[in-house]
Structures are given as structure tokens and as C-alpha cells.
Length: 574
Image (tube, rainbow, N blue to C red; front, side, top):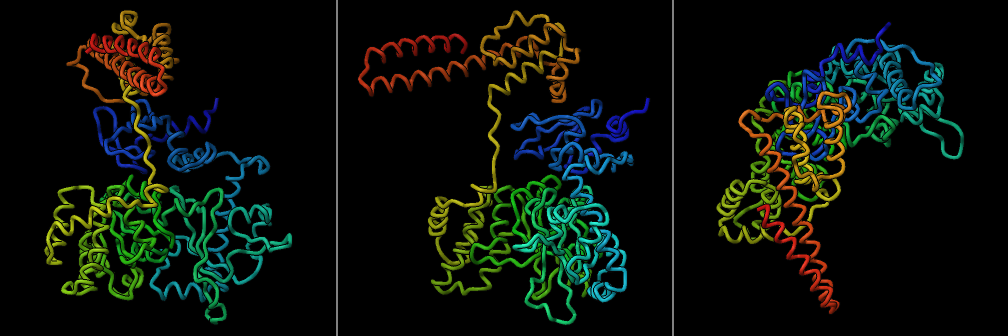
């Protein structure tokens, strides 16, 4: 009997190798661990088991599963898309489906792929000859044109729509994929991209999901139109989540331990041509919290290589501040005036590498820029310098580093440290919009839940301990944990039912050789009992206050007696 594609994929692909494509893993005993990519944390709680081919997070998100669940979570896709992605990695050809039963997402992926092929062909044919000559003149090589699948859209109203219609896709589907626009007030559609050089935008698996189009108009008749036009958000494309070039750059980012952040498609392409391949672009959008979380999977170090306006609340400045809040180490590449990375590479590729190598720390950049812009001997300019630099100092997480820069600023401004500290303290009361809207922290798992998880982990280490379950006081455990313990008693620790419920717990490394398991379980149970009693004491304390406020003194007295009873219980276990 033939095996299913799911089994074939699991047989061919190693979960560890697949996960390594997305995050940095460290060996931890027989397993691997990393910072969880699904929630913010500073201590690694994400574990991968090579022998069992499963992963689990022991942190606040508690996510876990097999290779398919990982791809679904990390790529943000449904099972069908995860199957397609993993089949491509494994070199397995999936059987063709009836087009009528394909999902909307699958159809959108197909439309994007066909559109990419159409644009590529247009660039290579006579209609795209001048556009290709322009690209070559900019310094983009033939090899890069092919590698990045650059194309051209002819200046016609419906050439792409007609092509895709011939492939069996409706105009409405082409519109939903972001490649057509519906004419206002009429049931007619036209191509979104016309007379433009096309840069496909790829997902992690190098599948085209969106497009950026640069206007190409040698005649100069369309100078009133936007220079760049991008695909709107679709079912498979979200500009706030995508970083152009990351599908190619992630291994180089991990290897070099820093990413270079640029603004445009050609900046990425030309940088890769010059040998700096750990580069990604925001594609003209503001840097988002999601993009930062993705970058942090590979490295916490960023070098920005775009125009940095440190005055005012620019989108770039907010992005940098957000990165600081997420504990990124940020540097700034000092670009020659008037040149972007693509121009610099075309002019002198060696200089581009030097610019990256000589990048300044973000705080040094702010200092250098502010002091070069104003005269620190003038009182009014001292204030302007402080207004530019202090917000950056305020974002520094380390108090030691923060104190160093406070002293440095005071010395350069020729003022007392106390004056700088006073102005800095004023900033601490100010709120940042981005911290509320974009940098979302997941609540930590409760201490109770962590202790119950440890009890279960200890129980499954030893069959003899499992046989002594009835001797433990389990009255303060949650119902879910009690149900699992009942399963262990009935089914045994090796049963499929138990393994399905708590099999991930043996991923967590723990030196159990020197531990008395029975004593450790009792210690955990005592702490849980203490936590529950303290919760009850807080609850009763609130009731006492409420009764006294309402002059219900008899009721308050009863609550006080109950309070004393729980205090004695707490003393007994302390």
C-alpha cells in the first residue's frame, strides 16, 4: 500500500533541519532549544526532539506539535499550504487536484505564480527590451534578473487579466490576488500594473505572494503617477509582515549574526551582487513589531542603511525605537550623501562593504548627528541637542550604559549631570504609542501551572513513583492535571493516550539523577497548596474590608475567623 504524502514528508524531512531554517537552535542534551518564535521571551523555552520529531514551548504560549504544526504556525498558513511547502522541501510532487475543490488561498498562490511567469516573459521579449536595458544600466546583472524573477508589465489595460483568464481564473479572483482593479461604477476590471518593472515579493518558501511595480516611462508622459505601486493586502500577502529578500537572506543573517535593513528592492538585489547577502528591505513601509520579531529569530543585531531623520516622529524613528524596546543592538550605516545602497554598489561595491563595517551604534549616530547640526555653545542649541538625544538614551535597557551616555551628554553640553538626569526623568512619564499598539507582551504562565507541569514531568520519569500517586495530597491541583494523573494510573506512562496528552514534557531537560523524586513532588505540592491558601487569604481580606465599609461588623467578624483558620493552614505547610 502506497504511503500518504504526509508520511512521505515526515520520512524525508528532519524536523530539526526544517526548524533551523527559521530560528537559531542550540544543542541541549539529546534535544535542541531556542527562544520561542511565537511569543516574546529572554530565556529559551522552545524545545525540539530529534528522536520523536516533535517540538514544544514550555513558556507562556505552550504551543507544540509536529513538523506540519510548526510550518502552519511559523508561516501563518493552513494545513493545505503547509503540506505544499513541506512537499516542495522534500521533493515530493503532490497529486493534481480538481480546480473546483482548491481553496481560495491555493488559487491566490497559483495566480501569483502565473503572473510572475507572465511578467518574466514580458521582460525578455521585445516589449520589455528597453526596461531590461534600463535594469542592466542600473547595474543589475542578467543572473540577478533571473534569480529575483524580475519582470515587466506592458502598458495595456488587460493583458494580464486575459492571460490569467486563459488559465481558468476569474477576474474577481485576479482582483482578490491584488493584480486587478475593479472600475468604479461598472463590472469591469483592469490590470493593476501597467508599464512597470515588476519585482515579485516572496514568502519564506520563495513563493511569490505580492508585487512591487516601478514605473517605466521613457517618454515622461506619466510623471504624475506614483513611482512605485504595490500589491494591496490579500489573503496571502500582508505588507506589515513581509521583509523583501528574507527568503534568501535568513541563513546569511544567522551566519553573520546581523541583518542589514534597506528600503528598496534594488538595494537588496545590488547588495547581494556585491556579496553582502544578509540584507532585507521594508519595501517603503514602516518597520513593524511583527517584522522585528521575525528578524530576531535569526539575530538581535541590525544595521540600518537608509535615510535617518532624527528630528520629529518619523516612521523610521519609531521603528528604531521599537527595535530598541525589543532589545535589538542597532547600528547605522553612514551612507555617502545622495546615494542609496544600490547606487553605492553600482559606483563602488567595495565602499558598500566598508560602510557596513564602519557602522556606528545608534546612540553614537544620534550624538554625532545632533552635535554636527547645532552649536553646543548656544543655550538654545543645547536644548535642541538634548531633545534629539535624550529619547534615545531613555530607551537603553541597561542602567550602566544609560548612566555612561548621560555623563557623556553632560560633558559635551558642558552642563551638570543632574541637569541631564532631571530632563531624562521627565521623559519617563511619557507614553509611547507603539508600545501599546505594536509591541504586545504575552502574559507569563502562572506559577501554579508551571509547578503542576513539573509534577507531571517528574511522574513520567519513573514507574515506581507513578505507583505511589495515591500517597500524595492532590486536592489542590487543577481538574485538568488530576484528569491526566487518572489517565496515568489507568493507562500507564507508556500508553498512547498518556503520551498524546503529556508526551512533550520529556523534551524539557532536567538533571534528575541527584533528585529525590518523591520529595520533589511533595515540595511542588506544598508550594501549590501555599499559593492557593494565599489566594484565599487575599480574597477573604477583600471581603473583610467590604463588610467593614458597609458597617456589617458581625459579617466582618466571621470573615476574620475564617482568615485565622487559613493562616494556621499556611503556617502548617511553611
